[in-house]
Amino acid sequence: MRERVERWLELKRYNWKNYDFSLVAVVLILTLISTYVLYIIQGNKFSMSRQVIGIIGGLIVLFIFSILDYHDLCTYIPIIYVISTLMAAATRLSPLGTDQDTKSYRWLDFKVIVFQPSEICKVVVILALAVFFAKRRENLKTFTNFFIASAIALLPTFFILIQSDLSSGMVILVMMLMSSGIGHRVLGPVAAIVVPVILFLFWYIQQPGQKLLKGYQLKRIVGWLHPEEAALGVMYQQNNSILSIASGKLYGKIMAGDTATRNYSKVDVIESDFIWTPISEEFGFIGGMIILVLLSIVIIKCFLLAKQARDYMGMMICIGIGAMYSFQTFFNIGVATRLLPNTGLPLPFLSNGLSSLLSNMITIGILLNIGIQPHRGSNSNEFEIH
Image (cartoon, rainbow, N blue to C red):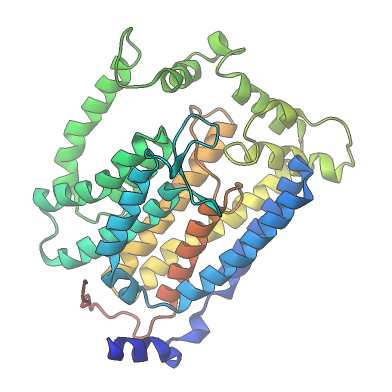
């Protein structure tokens, strides 16, 4: 333990010239854009102050995790995994669990702060899978390892699914598949079984009396498949989102000096799930494309860091984080533009929510640490698990 503390304190061993300040700058720009948009749509200086405090706290967390060796962090991942899973389960229990008046129990109320465990669970699952794959790397391509890895991801996912937070559960599952590295000899047969099952389930949920989905979940999917029949019902929000995005035109209403009533006032949850709607209306097509470029830079850097990582475990962590950002960005914007059925995924660094911001800052800090590790190219996977 003493040697580990001494090694942690020896910050000179890091390649500080590889510290990616450009990534930090892009993240900071995105969070400042979020703060500005949230102030416009909420018109509340208290909310803006809260967001700024969250950004400052997030940057501190980012710096801490950027100098904390991810190998040291991963040695304690079994303990962290158990704690985060128990926290996800506790959202259904009184007095900690709360629904925040949404009828979906996704939060823990610690009186001082309200926390959403599913956001941290995403990060923990990435780390847990990376540790598992690193330990089994020499004999990874087996069905046994696939099922164990699936169990690692599915346990916290189960508790997230029963919170009615289906979107977060999908994120964790997709991350598991995209960052597995198990190979086509295992994933091929699994896909041959899973794909037909998914197609059957997709057919089944549309049948009268189906038992898999809750009423609101089914309505969202059916409304997405038949938008003309649900234009004034479940699709009303997404239809208004499209009208709002289109009204931003090329330059957006802010640049045009348009002070007219905003169309996004007819859209719910514009501070989080539909944050892309006010962004597009205020900044227009050009502004939206600039923000997409910034998000793309973050995602691309994840995969570039995966290629440059010191070891296999670092590579797997970068791939998992990149997959998470890609999935969330695609689904959030896809929902706002009606390309996908309505879900509840936040847009990284832009959607309101301190839990989401905290988890994103943690992942960026881990990415930075992977980037400054010494001895690039080493294939060493040796680390202890407590």
